[in-house]
Each structure stands twice: as C-alpha cells, then as structure tokens.
Image (cartoon, rainbow, N blue to C red):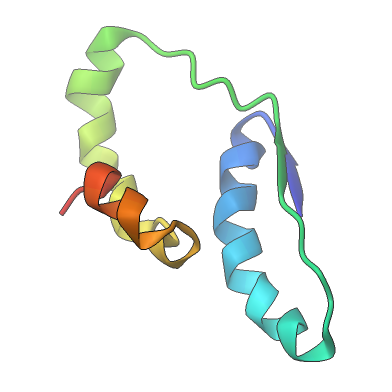
Length: 74
C-alpha cells in the first residue's frame, strides 16, 4: 500500500483496513508513505488541525500498545 504527499497518510489508514482481508491467504502487506512531510504553520497545528479529530479515525490497532499510551488523544 503506497501513497504520496497527503496520500502517504491515507496509506497508513488503508493498509491497516485492507491487510485483514489478505492475512488469511498468507499475503504480506507493506505500507510506504512517500513525501508526507506535514509542513504546516504553528497556527494550523493549534487552531485548525485539532478540529479535524484525526485521532478518532486513526487505525490504532497497528500501533503497539505501549506507544498508544503516549500519543493517543481521547
């Protein structure tokens, strides 16, 4: 599963959603995000981005439990 620019972020989400369909067949799924730099202004991070609520849609099951505690937003 690949994605470029903004699609690199979407590829993380979709790889996690699609992988379970291939796992029973023994197929290995690899995700590669290219050019997802996330270069934004501080104002965007503090004012606009929180309203997107991306944490609610993020496929947290792909992140080890120990890391979820540090980064997950309720």
